Image 1: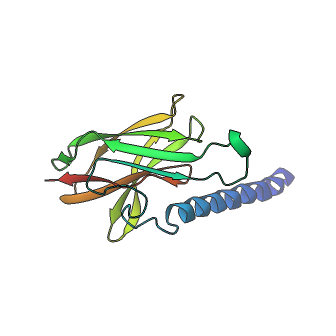
Image 2: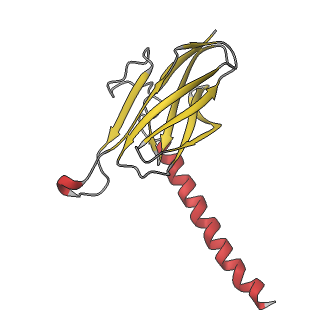
Length: 155
């Protein structure tokens, strides 16, 4: 019975750390400039590719690598629920890191149930199906680093 009491604080601590980590990822993904449609970061919202980079969060001299997340879509136009692929390349992020897909819906980024992983070559690929007709803006988020939006039209 005493083992049960020792386990509860450990589980509560893990849950608290998980919640703090999720809040940090959410804050990074929805921080300043996250919903500006690529304005000011050199991305043209009418193209099928995008790149976003940030300076390293800790001073590290010449060996520090800026974190980047660049993504492209293999098609700009699809039919409803037709599969297309997003291909991405990252720097400054470890292999094995989860890649999440987000879609702009009603002025905010919503995470969709699609996931991939960064491979050893620091790139990733993700199969996507969209059902909302019209112009859809999607992006990927890797380790809190969002890509610039990619536009895909569902006709």
